[in-house]
Amino acid sequence: MLAMALEDIRKVRLEKLEKIKARGIDPYPAESHKTHYINEAISDFENLEKDQTKITIAGRVMSLRGQGALIFSDIFDGTGKFQAFFKKDEMSEDVFDFWNEVIDIGDFVEVTGGVFTTKRGEKTLKVDSWNILSKSLLPLPEKWQGLQDHEEKLRKRYLDILFDPELRALLEKKTKFWSATRDFLKSKGFLEVETPTLEFTTGGAEARPFETHHNDYDVDVYLRISVGELWQKRLMAAGFPKTFEIGRIYRNEGSSPEHLQEFTNMEFYLAYASFKQGMDLVKEMYRDLALKTFETTKFTTRGHTFDLADEWVEIDYKEEILRQTSIDIDGSTDKEIKDRLNELKVKYEGENRERLTDSLWKYCRKNISGPSFLINHPKLIAPLAKSNPDKPDTVQRFQVILAGSEVGNGYSELNDPIEQRKRFEEQQQMIERGDEEAMMADFEFVEMLEHGMPPTCGFGFGERMFAFLVDKPIREMTMFPLVKPKEN
Image 1 (cartoon, helix red, strand yellow):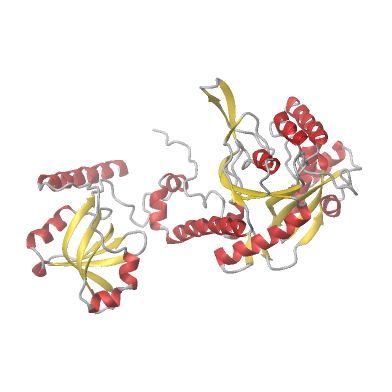
Image 2 (tube, rainbow, N blue to C red; image 1 turned 45 degrees about the horizontal axis):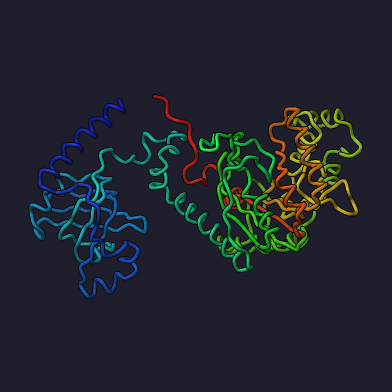
């Protein structure tokens, strides 16, 4: 019934479209004669009203009210909403009647006239003339009737954003968040760079990649799973001391409130710096981003409350797991770890030591509100980080822990080519044993290290951090999340 109703509406609107064309009017012109965005008209309203200035605003018709000789219509252009008023005896009768005859809610129009304030105090434009800018053939949803399905809302995201001011404001704030990130790093002297998104080997993270084929070279390639980690380190060897990139990455994994297959990440690399110096910079950056984007450092999300202005506690990986689970990750067998995971009702994937240890940690982190830095990770789970001199079985890695999750990851980057080759070979053995998320070996990167790379701190975070700060699933904060094709 709904499909038939929509088709009937479309048929009527097609008839209106033909009436517009019959007048010699282009229903989809290439330009508008707009003189003001609506927010400009609102901010300068008093002067426009006093000077009796005629203006032209353009936008989508969001409502039509009135009958007979009076019509009120709300026009929305993305910067604001403005009321347009049509009075039959004060404008061309033909112009008035033609509006009534062909215009529907959802159409894009431009209206011209002077502004005034109604008796109810509403800023209004009194229309002298109007033009069609785009004739809509399908109706807008009315208070979301017929568009309640979550997947359908995501599929028709343009309507979701149009009718949800809160969502629109959050997406605008997300843009502000990334702008603040870029501004902060540039203020610290970092050079923004672009690195390849197609790679022969994926590096910089442990994730299952998307694979495609390069027709010209006739080879299989992968979409990157990090924002150019191994490439930015090459830039350290090339003599650039500070670089960063903000870009899309791709991981062929499952979806969750915290994970997507395609998302935006930032990574920076700072030469001649250790992870300790990186931690100081990250604290400053997170506080700066919070203040510039949200005007606060205090957040409540995922059932946790934290203040980025507080002291950032350093949490030892091994000691925290022992404290929360009674498991010594160095002294316990694989079987003991599995038994404890089962007791804790923790699902785990994979049978190797790295996956089991990581599953224990993921159980523990849910109980940490932060702000905290997780340090002293086992070498096994960080194949690109330097070893700690005083604890050679651990690495100089730090992760930002907020609201029970990791929302930032950094290292003192490994620049010993012999050690890096050894760790790549260990990861390669994991792949051969069936671990699809183990890191691919990149021996050309090892060759670069043999030429020499300075001590470097690398760090990155993704848009999941923004989603955490606004307490929304990451998919909801993606402008156009991937949605399964609609079945016919």
